[in-house]
Image (cartoon, rainbow, N blue to C red):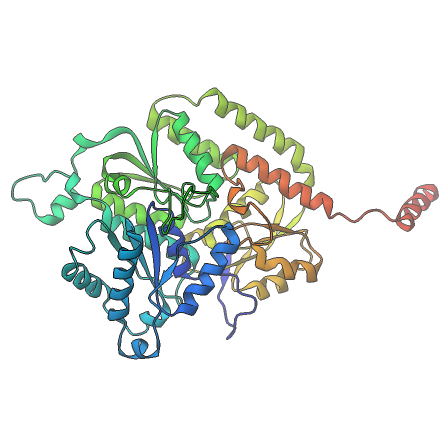
Length: 469
């Protein structure tokens, strides 16, 4: 059984985690015509904006209520209303996703009531724009929890309970929400709730695989349509591409929901409660066994066998496993990431014969940590990671781990968010057969490139030993 060690330090050294509001903003960025709005100071938003711009190398439409000292003391309802009205007037977004920060959360304001009052008194001015609130204080949780809370908030606010038919004329509102009609299900429609750790390339590959079974995927949120590096023909004040509001509204017509990552369990459960759509939780899409299970699931939903191109991709992965396992057997790996991504890469490397000697994560709230194939997990920062990673053959974390890699003299495989010192991080494939194949090649090449070259002294010593024998 894995032992989870809680953080005991009073200060963070070289932070590992990103905050909940940033995770929520990333989720809102996966919706077409959206603008995430940080309810807090300008500094909170600026820091998150810099990380997003450096990671994606794109223009990010992230806005702020710009709370000042007076509003912080007396309350920020006026700032929130002004920001919403300004965004509506200047950008006319389809969605404004409000991410609360620690600054306003510590006052224990009733944000839901404030937003309800704004929407009621400004109904005509805000027509055509959805306003979604995600409570995401910085002092609690981490990136993946903020992402999950934003997705759950979108489903709660936008998904139409009116798609369900009541069981009788006397049915209550609760019954109308929780007792859907099966007649309106679309047999080939599948709702997919991806975790934050799936890249643009991952989601594109996921869509292609689902469509190869004759199914129609609706992915919420879909960053592959909004953060894929395309250049619009004009300046856009909102996201362009991603999941449409109409698609979210009609999620109740899906025949099945597939959630990817343990942190997406709550949004999937909420969708089931609201619409009756059953869900399946897939904990990882990396590794031969995990992908085989996913392919079997798609075959079961669609009623058709896996296409020939899927079999070919699987065969390529099998060959990559044969080619690459020599480079991983007995190797020592150190990983620092959010819980679901920690599980994804820990199972990937142990499946190749490597050993996880150091595992550091951001929060202890996720149940997936109990399944991570490591003796112990430290809830901490990259300072803890550096202390525990000595003797490793490979470090696996985001770009903030590069200083630890330099000091330890250990190569670094960059994964997760943010990756700002390499180009194309959003187009890196890490899931399904092709993604697992590419990961094997990338990690093996890094290990090979950093193996010490044999010196003349070592060669002479080995020759003398053979001659003596």
